[in-house]
Image (cartoon, rainbow, N blue to C red; front, top):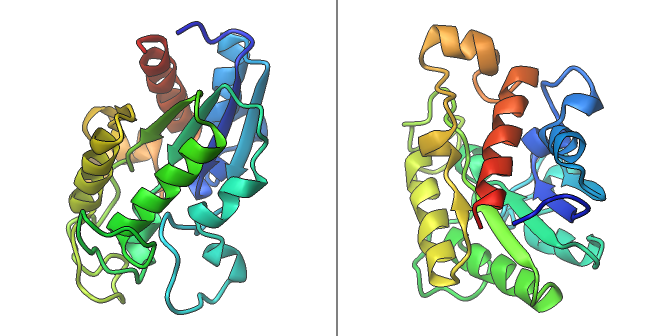
Length: 218
């Protein structure tokens, strides 16, 4: 796919919003726009948000603006929609995992089905892609950030995203497997995500590079 003059909507959490990056110009979406000549790179990232709705209110109301609720607020004229989330569902989301057959957003599976169907309804003839969460510190804990009911490690959420997207024939850029960022390796943590979760300028350059190559291959 040729990216020049394309308009891309980016739906995501704090990583898309740019937490941990030195300036807006270095957000991965803006790096992509600059290097590939995009007509628009619209950032719909909100820190702390999840794909699935939260059953109990969070301490910060902004965190409860789940991805599903924000689809209708996105500009309608995008050529490509990039969805990048799941790490907060793992970290502090209280939606149960559920089952692949779930069709309502009360579970993580059901929320993915609901989100994808809403995106298809709004953008039926446009390219929709997902990016999986990157690695993070303490990603093996079934309690996420430490205070949620036990569910799955982060890799389980990654696998579910890929499973549901495969059903809908949605391309997935697997940053968990191919993002070159693993903060359990101290030198990589220092280079790419000093807080163990949020990529810095160098990390965002990797995401932009991976995403550019991925989109061009479609």
